[in-house]
Amino acid sequence: MVGPAVRGPDFFDRETERAALAEMLRDGAHGLVTAPMRTGKTSLLRQVALELSGTIDHLWTR
Image (cartoon, rainbow, N blue to C red; front, side, top):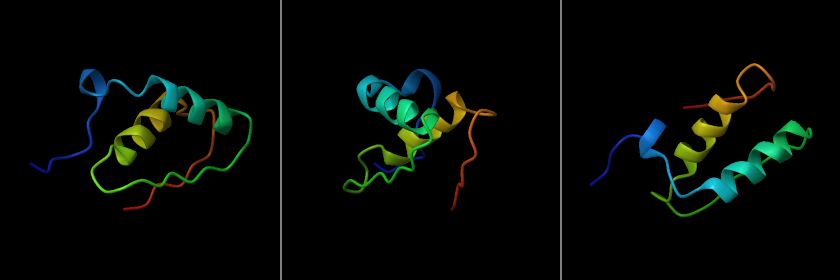
């Protein structure tokens, strides 16, 4: 079943990846996230963007 990116309480079990990406971005690094389809890339990026909202500049496409 294909559905939208998850948010809020439906986003779970990605704490290590979320924390690492957020730290890199706060430190001024650029990031590229690659993985097979349907593995949670969009959900991860949206969660980090929400967490860092107003503290970093980001480009969201699509």
